[in-house]
Image (tube, rainbow, N blue to C red; front, side, top):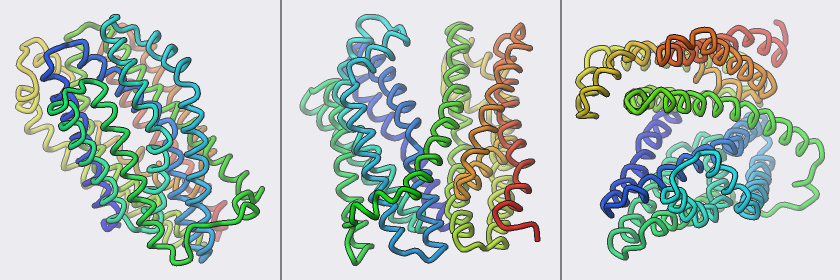
Length: 428
């Protein structure tokens, strides 16, 4: 389990480095509008690419299941199918870049200077879409074969090239915001080249496949259904975070800043739990393919138990050092005070997130995508209902609703789990 989860955790920890370096490089140019434009456009790409994260998830699950079933040829076919879908989706995004940019930037409502900078960044980085989505496929394919160290090497290479290209283009060549966007395109391009080289070396017979095999109607239908359901599930999850941030912004600058500080604490537990979810996806997918109920339930128990261990550790650390960390992250007395007022909610959140992250990985590995979709939509409804019922409490209502969402998301999946195991493996 840790041979998969460990590299995933390390990859998660290196990813924020990109944002830190880009923010620092652009921030040194001395124009707030440029920094705001990068921040706005980065959020757009985070949500846009996150929405198509099904490419990584489904590729991982189908690869692990094929491996468990002993279908070695299908392991290669899953990769090629995923790359074709990534190329198609990425090309569509590039073709729709003008109406897409108009829609999202008008909706976000930034100043003219910030929107102009953001549009400049968007117009360049959108060309990385096919490359970034193809990297999702390759990374999912590698982890699906339990080759997490190779996936980590590819991920870190992408991140380091992004950092280096940003520093060179922005600081040395004075390319400004266009340089930061170009760095992302260069990094994703280098990543997919490296990923395909690795994939080719792992497949002695090569990556070629006949169109007849690639376009197998039954396999394509199953892939489409799973991808569709994961995409709807992800859209519901994105809706929670967008609503949370929008309501925080409406509560005022101090509340918005305090929530931003506390969100960084949420990321700490997410780094660990998401790594364990990656392990669950591979182990459970392999067990489903092999029709091995004992391995499946054993992997579930390991992921949930270790998830509680990591979450308890994070909770204790936040309880002991949370106030000091808040003071280190902001010098504003009002923001410090507001963040302390809501620290308790963040402190207990890892314990509620265990089932949410763990069962996400289990459901993805087993390709129980329809149930995951339905339960996530219900969790979104409970989040909104909780906020609406408590909205007079202001930001407190928002944090309570967020915890309700965590609890509902994991609790509903845990309650549904025994029935799905019986359906997948039989009642005995």
